[in-house]
Image (cartoon, rainbow, N blue to C red; front, side, top):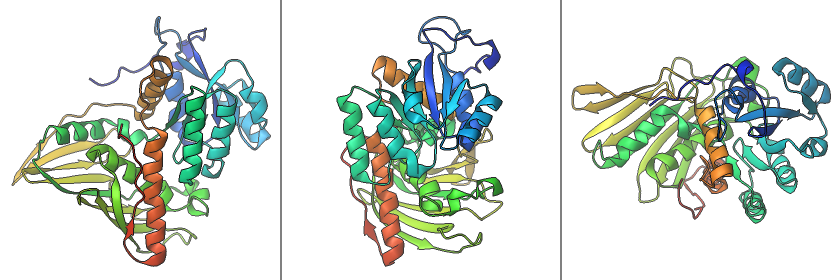
Length: 361
């Protein structure tokens, strides 16, 4: 069943059942999705008039911007002193959504302060550093999770269910077209080094999606840069051939600059194929079609707010010890694929992807 919509934020009260979040970074994702997702959580026990979680404070490197953003969004505490904000007693969790170059240092500070952390991918562009942060969280009894929200969309959940039920027989291959044009207001650090370009912005999530759907990791990759249309210093349009362990092939096309092409996932099988369109997180127009010969059948998809679902899994990990939507090991697997793609573009050849030993969640 689809998630029931939460009450309006203004009707929620805060008490000792409410989990306070410090948000690091006044980002696009926070503005459009995560602020509502945090406030929309039900309490662990009690009625729906109580906020299960709330944004208690905002951290930014720019104190003036932090205060202006906080005032606009009803956040009481804000500033550029991370240590002071982490020291507040009501803060139990930190959502890290600032520039990716600050992710690892922010995660480290939060864990050192004894806070649980939900981080936008990547946690770090260094596999070794991510492993160190994972161990740091483990030894302190804290939850460290990566916010790969594509995993919690209704269409991806349904795709995974159908694959595991052998709905199209033996899987023969897959294709992902992640081609949404990059809006003008987001053409800032996303088209600048470091962390700019489609590898970190798109392939990172594509790789995790393949792992999540097929319970298997990318083993080899060959990447080709196609064209530069925005005039940036980063890769804007890249075609990848990825082989998962066992040899399953996938074609992945990532672009910032191709209009009129919806985000789509196609999975080919011996008894049919699955074709999902408009399937990026947050798009409520997603469609899933089963093709068998000349016959097509639409499949019902639950309407789910993936950001709210990811926060719910994070809180369940804190309260109940459940596994969050994506773990640091999941993040390392996706980062390993991006690093291999970078090497493939530099060397113009097929590259082996470092394998991360873990059970896919």
